[in-house]
Length: 170
Image 1 (cartoon, rainbow, N blue to C red):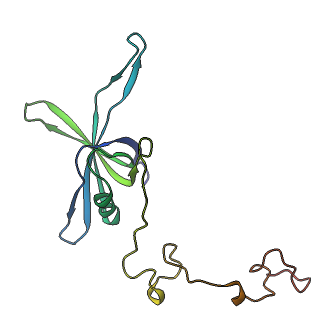
Image 2: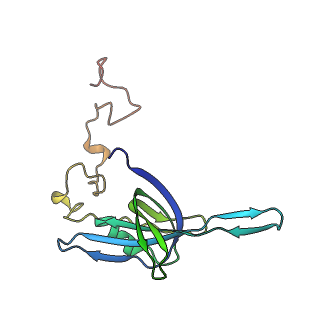
Image 3: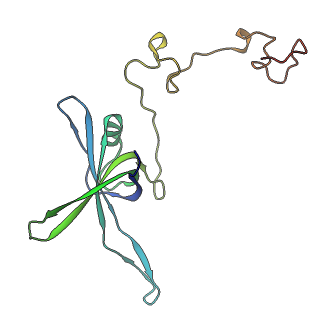
């Protein structure tokens, strides 16, 4: 949608992802990401931490289930999404505060200080299971084809071979 503010945040998860389901059965996950800026103080020759920025992030449907299954407290993540208008509230001590909220489009573990193993999740609804697979589904398993099953005179199926005629193959 036009006019939305898209941002990318790099930080650590404050808690384990909190997965819930709506009454309609739609998965929603909520995570808090903390990002602390660091600057180098040349006078003391030491790194100094700035004030931590906390952002509440929300994901829906399959992304929500993947986040809950894959990420844990303390994981360094890269989050991209749409920034929502901050909501103002009053803390228990009477201080005025504002909360930043982000609707997640993409989220993943940061590989700067860690390694990861990615496992592709099977699509629901039987995709990739032969005849029930949706045509054109890039995640479905493609049926194995052999070169022998393609016509020998098909110039596109056999690149680098001369076609049988002078006509273009299309």
